[in-house]
Image (tube, rainbow, N blue to C red; front, side):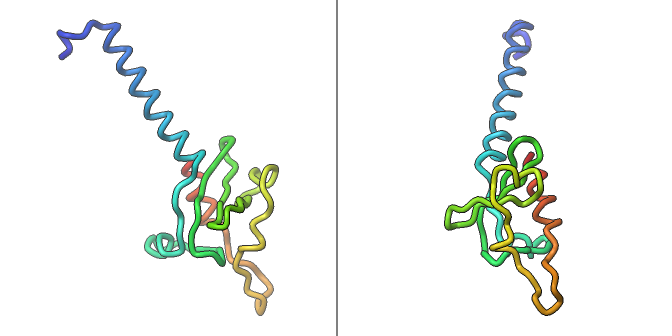
Length: 114
């Protein structure tokens, strides 16, 4: 095939391929990916929310958000709090121990989408 396509044509194909991959990655982060208690448990990760599932995403390079099935989008980390409300209403808390469950796994998974 390299004999069929000229050097400029090969470069064009490489650039187009890179653009397609970038568009797919951007769309995935922008729209979010499915996240659930079950999926986190399967990876030995902590699910810190009272809801069973939703969409996890990232915008602006490091703003991790979670969209619950009821359509409300919450800030998972501080950078996302500029745009979205705090996730506290759906965050698991241990009232007896007076603390909340760690958000680290959810934040880490969200940052992978950035």
